[in-house]
Length: 321
Image 1 (tube, rainbow, N blue to C red):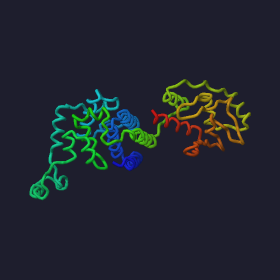
Image 2 (cartoon, rainbow, N blue to C red):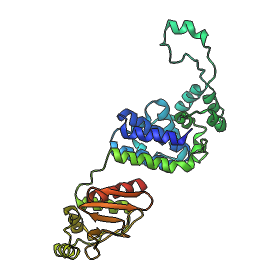
Image 3 (cartoon, helix red, strand yellow):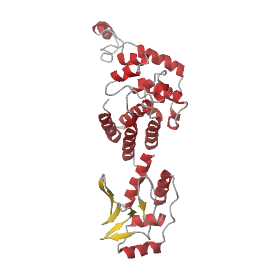
């Protein structure tokens, strides 16, 4: 499997596909992460999909094999994750028997080509049935052989639905060798979900409260007074944009966290050559009513407003969580 090519396609589908295509891609990706042993990443992706789309979780387990796969993985890990509570309960012994029969069922080159009926029966001899090598490898419990035959889009649902193999997958067997890639895969797809479904963070107090919740750290400083805001503007020689004034009225600065610098309060704001420094270190700048975020590695990003910069910060925190 070409992981880079797969991820490029998956991100594109999450951003642009119609709802059924999005659901199919996220459902596949979550199972792909799960069979690498990256269960936390699989749960994070599925949970973010559920929170963003608010669609029935059964959309991630469309079809009997995917539904069976999640049931077998849940049994192997000792219970369902929170996001999967809405999946229909299954009789695992019955599902195991059905899956074993499915793995051993012969296939023909004409499978799916001709509709059931007399013509299909007449031409069966043209392409006689034979064992499916990929499924047979799973029936035999041979993960190495399955991985060598799995192709560019491995059938991870059929793999995970194989009850005898689910405990090894949950324990980190990682037959496709993708464990080190799982975090970046989940992060990219969660970021795409956030871009497709941007959060509505409401008022400034709601936005700050969400940032603090995601940080899980100390509370914000108290609000700045109107007098303190006006004094800062006189000292800077600049009238602050209204959205930045609203931020200061909500909290007079914010401490740093893992993805953002310390945001300066009224007493610490400073101006250099007409540019207001909004953060320490000086990677967030106010210039001509635009907020410029300076990254020494990725370059500079121009945000249309201070609120847009904080909204982006909240998105990054959600992705990191």
